[in-house]
Length: 430
Image (cartoon, rainbow, N blue to C red):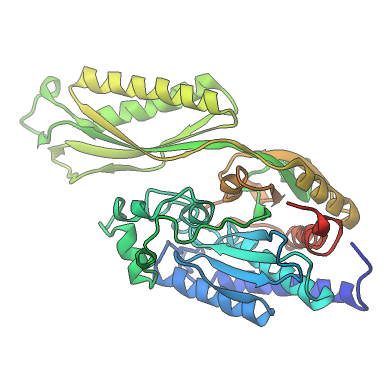
């Protein structure tokens, strides 16, 4: 990094401390009694958090506001508008009773990094933008990456009227209720951006590799692919006392066998493939009725696209066989198919250089979780910076990262963004 203005090291330290404070404050939006955070897309806690992010960005001197679907952008405008901007950030939504670091750390670290750069160096050559994506998790609606998917043109607006949450509220209804009537734009991609030079995301690891290896920074090489499905198993509801066992078409018993075979096949396939049934719901279930309808989710991940596809086909074939043998019907809906995405090598080298400059122990590793960077990788140079997760815990109130590691990640991000906004990378064509 170029020579800093007087006292800028002290200023960097101050911004790092402010980042920790802002992260703690953000966790109050949607705070649970259990100690976790629940901010589901377009709910009141989510909206208040996004508005708070805008206010914080503006106080840092960034031009901030919503786009058509609820993403928030804070822009540090460059002196050369012909240069494609570099985006940095993550998502503001959470899983139900999740932690305060997943997504939120990347949003807060990014806006504070731009605030520091503006205060220290003024306007960059290339515009830098901190982004708080409206949604990534797929927790409220059976669709992930709604925010980054609009920016990259992967998620068309028509999907908003086709899916609903557990209360029957469609995505379109929820969006309008929150004040985002993107349909007035008359476009399928009202928030799509055509002019993007790169994307850098900082995030907690959500695993235990960095802690095990005693590293402060992880440089992501690739993000695993994901296939998410909803499986509906239908049998016949009947009296639990008067229906003989051999005459039953028990949807829950069939679903239970399907869950068991999913685990068995995943174990047989071996690493790095993983398969998970994360939710199982008995429709209109009661203690004295043979279940007639069951719905469960499937999450399949692998670093190799053909291997992931092949496993999915094999698994669904086995589920069909189970249903047929039991006299059940089965329907599957694919809610997400995100292929594995490699991160950009030149950006990875910049992160390595930043770690060397900061004296941070680092390593390269793949991401077993999906991230917004997965959608940007195919359209622009993209990179991810990981910081350790204590115990590998994530999506839980127990999610935790040490303050020193959060600060190390923040310093690393500042260094990389400096290179793309003010340093040697600022003059490159992206």
